[in-house]
Length: 410
Image (cartoon, rainbow, N blue to C red; front, side, top):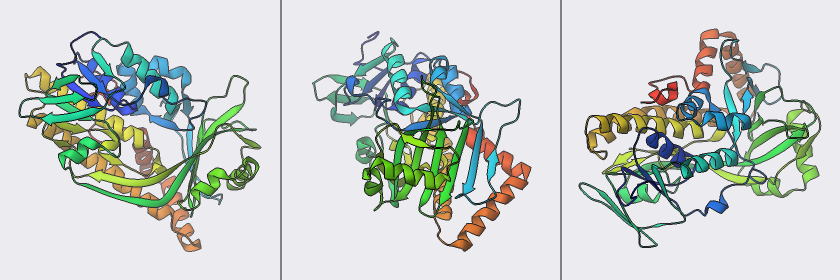
């Protein structure tokens, strides 16, 4: 520990991927950070059992590059060279393929691998103090400081508290921030699979009335077996049943959904089931408090943008805080937090609303709905400017980008 963590510049609650990234971006600019989480370091996710993966878009990758983490991540990442979108297995696919002079659409990384690499980088950083496992016994956001007492009796103080404590954020609740939320009639089944034919660095997003069926490319294993991650959205009532049917029956269902275009398939990990919901906060800030990631918003995984949306929060908050610190402002100053809230609220709302609309549109049953979806897919495929806009959105390159998402330190 390189400093007295009783007096940090920022306290972060939550040592998930978003909280750890936020700590690293702030420390990269000379700010001292304390992280609190109840997780035991030995209980971090295991790539052998955790089926979750994330598509890190090119803007988010720029940020990892700027803070010196891209080199460690690169050997574990699989390029997305093409995204193929289709209404089930019917004719008329929409394909997103970057130009020869462009980078990939994104890079697939296993969540457990990303989490471990971030954690190791945080452990090695002298400007970050880890308080693990620990819980907040009391939090007092006073006029000039935030005072926190941990369950082990330790006391921490900083001008600002950043809540990266997930969907059920205690700090959001204590601050009384209003949140709109609802549950979808969907659960996501997540697992890793092997398949006979190579994926060709293609991410497949197939839409069925029961929900999207996504196959996301991963690196081959040491034995040269082709691997992908599966995110299969089914109705909430069917989720537990699909997760528990025997492997042979589950693989048969996967083969039916894909029409066998990847050849024979096998399960590589256990199947995990996650109920899906939507939540969006009216504000991302309160007195000496800022929300990032799932603490402030949560969307359906239909567009694969959940992690990237949180990373945009990280980049924007870092820029607001670093520029505020340079002008001598208190890091919990209202004008710094107001700038962050304005910057992120509209973008979060637009992405959340469009994702919710997609979820509802692609979930409508019946042949008429299918024809409308195929017509929309066909229009995007045939109109280059529209297609280019969708590609830019997928790569995270639209809107008012913070410097970190352009690959620059603030």
